[in-house]
Image (cartoon, rainbow, N blue to C red):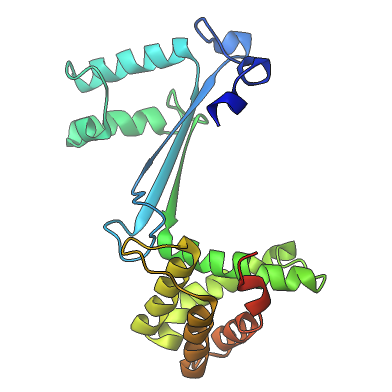
Length: 223
């Protein structure tokens, strides 16, 4: 794979020198917290956060130096969020990210509820495929997102928390292909769980989504 990612096409934007905003050059750094593999259910962290920052080398150096001075940090050489947990230091970081801060418009943080992520994938990987085969675009007008939100928001009340969690866990096991213990979840097992959830559901909107999912066997079967 590394050989395929070499050559002029993959290095044409590399910068050997210092990047400067004035020259239209900046880099984007991204990092995550809470990712503990594709096993998105019943893990240590319920939420996944993804942060990104667009900045050039000169600005980054100025900001890092100012952070150290304002927060009175001398160690270690690499700054971590844990260094700013003290009340006086967290305000320094908040000012930096605020509307008038040096990183205003440069930073973004997305927080993902893993259970909602899985619920959305139930719609995208199963129902959206089935609807597409019938010439229906579920993403038009946000219909797919609304269905995912309905299942996520009303599912625990319609199925009970344990029942909803079983649907989520079964979908994770199915989509993972092979779980940590070596087990797999078949199409039959997935649809059986959805069928059982449908039989228990006592909210019309949730029942409608589950009933639609029961028609997706053809699209759930791996190619």
